[in-house]
Length: 193
Image 1: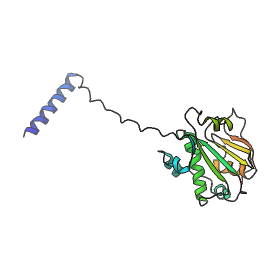
Image 2: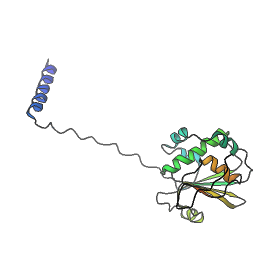
Image 3: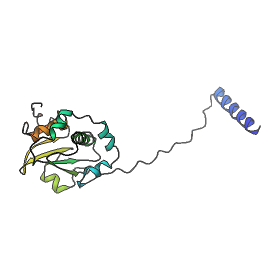
């Protein structure tokens, strides 16, 4: 009975407030949950460590690499080295790197070339020695080397899909800088397939 009287009283106050045009009492302010601390990996790292960063696994699930290019990655001549400079905080890295992983996984998880990962800080200043030695300005940057010599790189956004452009660099169908950035020159064309 007491609850009914209380509800009736609250309803009456609400109706009277609405009829009188008076402002409703201010709502209790909502407090936002504190943001989770951002994970920024700096220096030599591994795929496993990067995959522990929130949102990276979902990016890998969502990636849709070209199946033929993914399969062909397993057939390139052995001996190349690919160094991937990435930012765990970087949207472009989160788009391109998981796509490469999904392509490699489609091929059974092994490829005839070595892949190294280097995490870079927000300001792209650390790890300073590696960034300077490799002239890394944008992320991600995939650098392909054979016999210790750079044959090409993919910078920021891959023009044809990271798996296709990496394949072209690895099999010699492309060289130089492959990118959609206009300040680094036009994207190098390469035959598909």
